Image 1 (cartoon, rainbow, N blue to C red):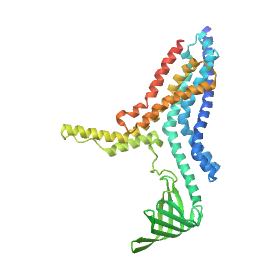
Image 2 (image 1 turned 45 degrees about the vertical axis):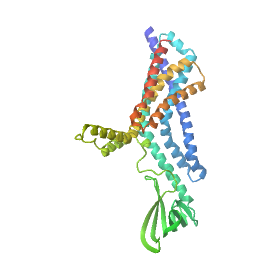
Image 3 (image 1 turned 180 degrees about the vertical axis):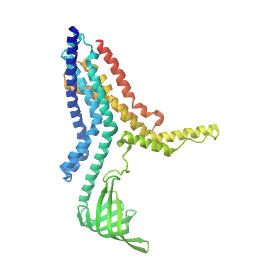
Length: 397
């Protein structure tokens, strides 16, 4: 009968603590998501909103695409804060003391929370390696499209404007990218007109994949001055690409920091195949060793940034477990109900953890220091320290 009563007490405490942690987790993740979103919204989205050329639907879609990206950081921070708050209150209200008096150990109490942290690790791994990077790429494309439409609208009618370093643009009419009576002056060294293009009509389009603005000219007539000689040509259709300061031009594939884990793996395999094999072994030993070292250095300098990003996505997925191991005993030790104390401790621990992540990424150009392994150091530290603190808290030390 006593064993049944104790089992019911443990189940009740499990439900109570799990419910408290989940409720706090939802709240803290929402808070951190909002805080992290504000920075991106003020930096990029607010400009488009204030210009009046971005529809509410585009703004909502942009924010929606940003949310999975900020969850990469908000989920571990939220779980750490939730465990600090819940177990701080649990200890301050003497509920932990009462549970211990009933013969229930701390490790028995927190087992569902540890399983919850492992589930959060799986969720974080999916967000880090797939959902987050894909959402970031889609967000960048959406913002580029919105900026391109804004630039298209801002190309005025009946005025000569500089659309690039060596190009002056003029159009008599601009109807949402449909142009009439277009003239383009191509300058020599930015001063003298070298070629003049005239077209009765044109079309301005956006290449989101390659981050370019493309001008299609129809029935184009060009006049080129080369010293005292004049060359006149006519073409039925002409395409020109311009850099109109929308954003930093990128290649068709996303940046390394915006690739999914599987894209990074494919990129690494492709790069290793392009690099090839080490020098042949028929060379003299000293020369062979020198060439092999140089080959390894060049190979690592090219592949290390990809390895760093792959390890970051995987290592960062285990932050939830390490934060939980540290957050539970620290919450008990702090023994406070105040929310601001929990947030302050969480932010301090997050700064310590992220300093290793930032340090490892900043050393990606130094493969000799193995920066991809540095990214695993905070997990080892937090899990080791958390295990020791939990053992001490379980023994009442």
